[in-house]
Length: 500
Ligand SMILES: *[C@@H]1O[C@H](CO)[C@@H](O)[C@H](O)[C@H]1NC(C)=O
Ligand SMILES: *[C@@H]1O[C@H](CO)[C@@H](O)[C@H](O)[C@H]1NC(C)=O
Ligand SMILES: *[C@@H]1O[C@H](CO)[C@@H](O)[C@H](O)[C@H]1NC(C)=O
Ligand SMILES: *[C@@H]1O[C@H](CO)[C@@H](O)[C@H](O)[C@H]1NC(C)=O
Ligand SMILES: CC(=O)N[C@H]1CO[C@H](CO)[C@@H](O)[C@@H]1O
Image (tube, rainbow, N blue to C red; front, side, top):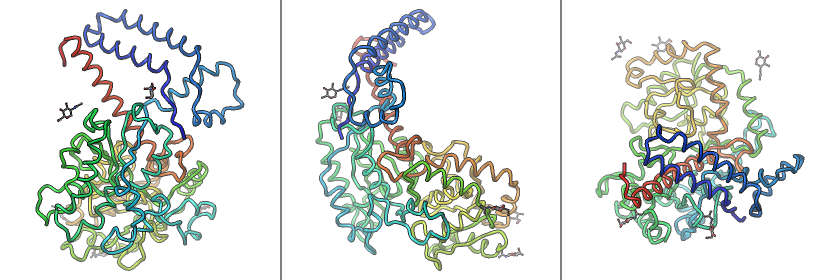
């Protein structure tokens, strides 16, 4: 599909706005209110002229969009078209690098050999969504079953790549790009070599990828500061501090060439401004809006038999494992807590037993896993169960683009040290929430649901943006702002004015 190009009124507007910023930065604002007014009038006039002059021919995607508006009156068609296009990709477009296949496609083809212990072929199948779900017929309506997949929690880098290739604001022309996406499967590339290897061996795939990308002309333009990629694993797999072989992970994010590159990950390092976390993929991938609507209604009206639940496996190797504390507590609290013990039950990605436990509970206990966050917190919210956290890092610095900032409105926090000292406070705290409190919290989880889901279609979820759409739009916004600031300061320098 051909990407559409920016329109000339837009360019004019941009120029005008830049010059306005330039003037604003040189004259105190209160002195030039009149100036502001005049410029505003000029902009409106020029936009009016541009809107009525010959518009560029609409691109293919634009025409598809317009099909939905056939019944609308045709007057002012040109004006409407240019306005719509403005809105359509208002933050710019993404260019997707055509990386050598060893950094992505070959890994998929080699899926039986990406992990020391088992095949990853199921995990990366279906564009990262995984195999179609089975065994859910007794839990959810038949017509919704087709929206469920056994999605692997580390498959987001494949899902993002698939979606990006069909993204509405993708451009095939790098000169027109605001953002450059590097479709490197950073997690799959190291899945097998994270264990039993030297630090040097682990770093090799990322080093080779960076060597390739640094020679690209559009990398050199801004030294990578308008580039981004997706990390399918937790950030901790990419942050090795030393070259000591016994130290965990790769040093990818510490490599000098990565110092400007924006990264999306399923759990971010809280003190890295260049990193933003995005939701783990869950098992539900609606294609149509009615599917998500139907699911929201189901979650809302569900009669829940348990006060809270705990799904997980204790780590026998870890001494004093907090999950074991919760597991023992929950097994003893039979009247309030529903347990799914994954060391006994079959707990594959989104398994029916897990979904049922979340659908049957008002709250779900979410201790930290290998990192501070867990895929399980999204499975839980998706089923309308309110997450209970025991570490602040599980929610405080994460998912800022996708979840409301007011986390106390839809989650509960209790300190793990207090719970360890006296587990009975879990029920005491949760008992304080009235039925109405719970209903309100659940309603928030239901309403923001489209934002933390990954749609099954190429185009997102129709009128609502899904997790992918939101993430990429925010990336574009950030790069666009960055570029505008840079342009203003460059112009200021040229004019010999003070820089501040
Ligand atoms: C990129 O980095 C090189 C080497 O550090 C430097 O010479 C150049 O000015 C930088 N370019 C930009 C656009 O920042
Ligand atoms: C929930 O329970 C109420 C009362 O027992 C009943 O009227 C309602 O139909 C039930 N809802 C569902 C979805 O089963
Ligand atoms: C189990 O529950 C009972 C009654 O609720 C309580 O008295 C007892 O202390 C609990 N035991 C543990 C190990 O939590
Ligand atoms: C531990 O729990 C006991 C009661 O169960 C309480 O009196 C005490 O203050 C708690 N200690 C801490 C450090 O929270
Ligand atoms: C808006 C914009 O920059 N459009 C450009 C996209 O790329 C083509 C080919 O390089 C240019 O001709 C357009 O001006």
